[in-house]
Length: 457
Ligand code: BG6
Image (cartoon, rainbow, N blue to C red; front, top):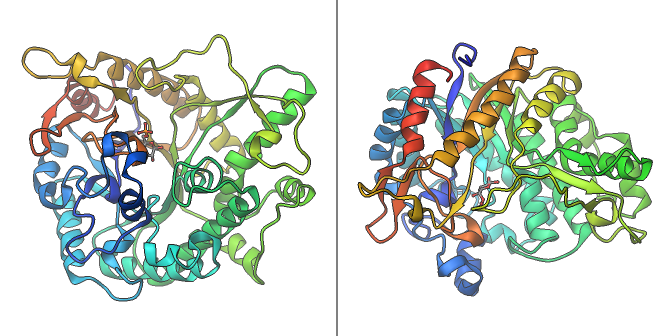
């Protein structure tokens, strides 16, 4: 029996734009997703846009009962900035009533709400002013954060500022998966820097708000593994970790930007514009906890003929196709549970053993209806095995002293996922798009219930 520490958090994560629906009603203003879909619906899988998603705006009470039914004691979702402050300044009272009731009912059901402020949904009004490229975004975000703490701080005690900041940076400014879908390394770094400063100012607003609780950030961790011990491969790994792991973890936890990162950016003419006093704020406003979203590692090797100065991150490290890798045959990502142990040890050794939790981990499956039995239940044994393998590695890390306080899956009810729409299903509950988003329990939900009841497996 693998037993987890007392009061361990069992639950799932999702986000407002991926679940709420009502994307252009009830006082909400458009985000980049609403606008991008209106401009280019053909970019989105099966032309499924953000307007409807799984209608949590109306179904949240039933969903909370479903959380309880599978033993979840916590749940992370986000507030839609565009719903709460449609023009960035004026509070939408309908949104306040919705979120207060949603969070209160969760709490009353024994499901601790962990509330995140930004999950890739940039308001359109701010995008028109440059989005994260403009320093104004920092002020706008900290005003939003302060407003949220004031309005919900009496209910919510665990807060996060951003979900996976690196994803909106690289998908928006390097790999064309998020709006504005441009390729510009220098802008990507500037966007990253403003995101970091927006985070720091939100932490400051939290400390000043007097809310009784804790605040953290949710990062996507992709530990880099080098092709070989050759110095050039190891150097590629170092650079990959600097850009993808330390870039946010170091300032958020240790209060410093690594000198090696600054030097690397400087040598490649990528340094962002900064403002006076930023360094002191970074040093002062570190987090209480870290959320780690882990799906897959990064296999890297030395790049062949890299450009100088670098035009893309691939000029620092090239992807390496490890012949022994095990793939998720239904989604196409590597499955490597051992990385969770490595992450646990990294947090213990390099990040002052700060409290952290696995804030997302999960197995996406395309065309999951093929695993439905005659009673209509998805027999997702692959997902159970996936969770068991990851939890085993995580447990090893906890046994060795890593300060991990929970394990959240992505996700609870199948949800809409950006350009992928509903292609990859991750939930404990299936969503039927043909039947008004009706939910039905999968086998993994029953397994999770036992897991949480026994605090182990
Ligand atoms: C996570 C994101 O990294 O991956 C989610 O936080 C996203 O927002 C999830 O939905 C799954 O992604 P995909 O591409 O498999 O649908």
